[in-house]
Image (cartoon, rainbow, N blue to C red; front, side):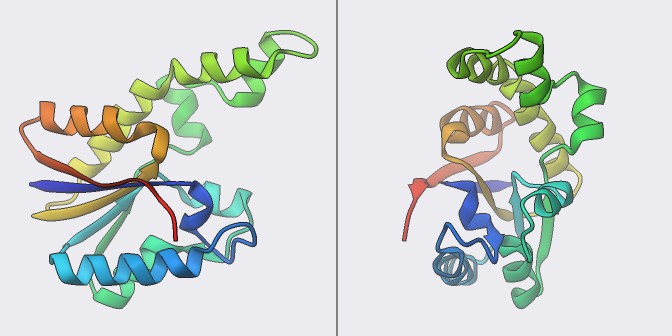
Length: 164
């Protein structure tokens, strides 16, 4: 199993996002997946996130549909995060008291990133594939690459921080 990693700003994953050129990413991903013979497009995203950010859809899911290949959301939703012990940004901020330092909240949130990455890996295991592309936030690329390789899978970084 081989996983190509594309790190980016999450706004590019949301169809209809006003702040990011999601259409440019969609064209890029369609071309990349077709050229590389990808049989699975997976991503650090969930249905819940699509609703939260009022997106019209997932770029990756749309591209997978156009190509007739599988798609997999891999990020835990809020109930799954609670079940595996990941606190929300808001809960962390509340626990740190009134007017918490943003850097302290973000540092505390980063402590759960290894749990999230293992969750993504388990979601990848659910679907058989030969060549996958995994779309994720740019801050996770190297650590997720290392985790994938630790499982004996092939991994390569296509972009650490894709931009149009």
